[in-house]
Length: 226
Image (cartoon, rainbow, N blue to C red; front, side, top):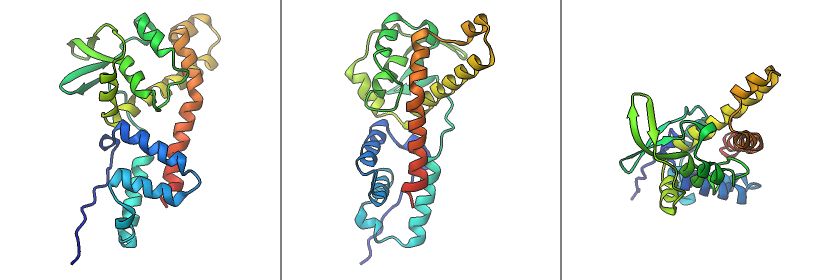
């Protein structure tokens, strides 16, 4: 008797948590020289397909699944989500990076780069805090009280569309910063365009991490799903 298997292929990163994404990164890195294994891990993590089930799929079905995953893995257009709701609580992105609380600045400065890795849930816990007041598009957030393990765990369970929206915000800020420096040598203009000195340094050092993530996405999209 044939057994029916329900296939669920995510079409957006809202279906992938940070915890799952980090696990995928780890598996892909461990098997970076084995494309077949990488494909198997992606099908398992993202679609729940075990190698046993995958081997029994017809070519057209498997091809359609891989095509849909390619679209997901190559997606980068995620605008910053300034307010995120977690467990019924609204968390707002730091309204003014150039004037963030000193404690938040110190904790953020401990990280040499802003990269989606094992430290990312800590970074998100620093950048997003509970909203205390909101009027239209304007909002205020809770004063910084440090990062708790509970909050880090909550961010691990949130979806990657949120995390990518924040990551690519820094990517765009980094590029805008470089463009501003290249286009003008006037000190006053630079003063207006440049955020907190150490945040600027983080942006610059994060350039390599940003490029690595984009390269990883392109590698997954172009080579792993074949």
